[in-house]
Image (cartoon, rainbow over all chains, first blue to last red; front, side):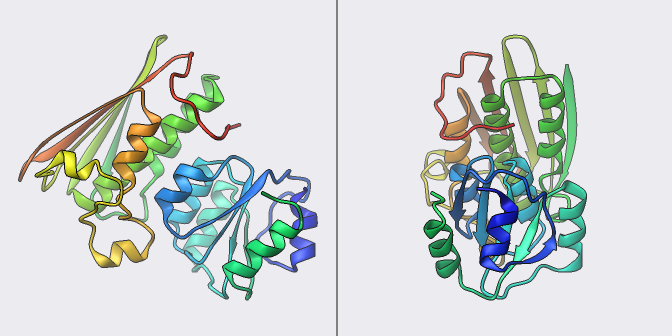
Length: 110
Length: 148
């Protein structure tokens, strides 16, 4: 699945937009950074309620396709600047992590 | 090739930069993607341990034909019981840091999982040193993902 299609289907708000053609290989949902480091894979979208800039470092190191900040949590300006600098796409939604993960699963992501 | 990075304890704003820079160099050198991923994850965990627990640290990365070696040495409180610290879920991180998603007690286990060799030495009140070796190119450790 392509990132652009995923973003449109879920109605995500683009805070730092990514390439619509970027291939999304799957998804991971967690708020523990070490758990994400251990289990998320390249090209995954990461659903989390963490919003600080270390999220960007983790996403960048793992070459994730995008970070989805769920539950209405929003990053500060510094985090967004860092994400733009590192080329890490960031999206926001008011929906909970549970709902976002469910919708991603329905779209066929694993 | 030998690279040096400085890491400041408590500097969460810069945390992860050393690992990112190391990863970028390994990519430029064209090392195998899965190896880069393992080095990046393990170095990030070691870097975060310095940021979370220590006052100051330095990372030395040696890139040689046979292996990538990463040594992380810090001045800090040290680890009284390394065996205990190696257990998944054991953490001494303060509450505020746990709320950021750190301090889950997975750092050292993640390093062990990613590295082909891990040595941790520590002296209470002085500091800790972590040595990791990643063999090239035949990756001894299986990994679930791939990197670009």
